[in-house]
Length: 310
Image (tube, rainbow, N blue to C red; front, side, top):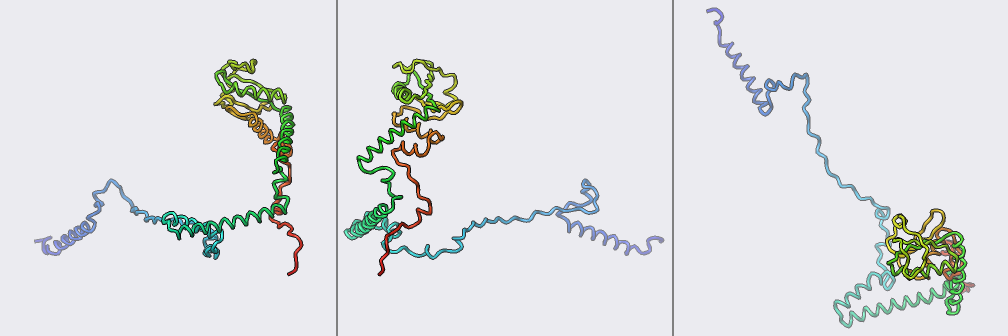
């Protein structure tokens, strides 16, 4: 018969092609066959995405100071026995031991060490007193006398300086006095404000927050509040403010304040804002204006007298 003279080689070729296709399918069994994934279209080259590399978590190293990299020998040296550093670290241990176990020996050790420390403090006090007496720049007696009669004179000078300072303030500033008719403390503060007004001619502007006068009749002519209290942030009465025309308002006090404290606050704010000189401000505090030592003067050793040859 023609065409079928040798059918075996043709069958072998067909079986080989089938086995090859089967091996390909088994090799990519986990993947979707290309011919069944026609929705993706045709590509000359398909890029398969890869997972990003795993990032390792690193802990930032702490910043080291120069002192950490080079340990000093002093930090490793224990303090000398009975030195101030030794007492600072060891005396609490002896105290705790005496409290936890109050044997005669533990108590004796603690009080003996405490006695040594008190003697060291006493020697320091005596030496410091001698140094202060030998250097006038360290002696507080030149700022304000320590003696009783000297302190009385300093107080008299402070009162005179305060009178002068308040006269200067009265030329530039006034006082805003805010009150309420139902505030009993306002009735007590009003005479003090009135005394400053009469004695030092300080202009006072009374402001009634509820539009009513004080029960005891102080400041019958007043202004009613029209939002000033809210703009000034007044929460308590009586309230006192220092006024500098045209727009500067400085809070002085809220609540009942004694005359001496009220005057001191007015002086403090006036000095801060430059109305009073440093010398006059110092005099109002009962002190004498003295020069403060510079850094070089403070670190320089005072003259110790003539040296003697050994």
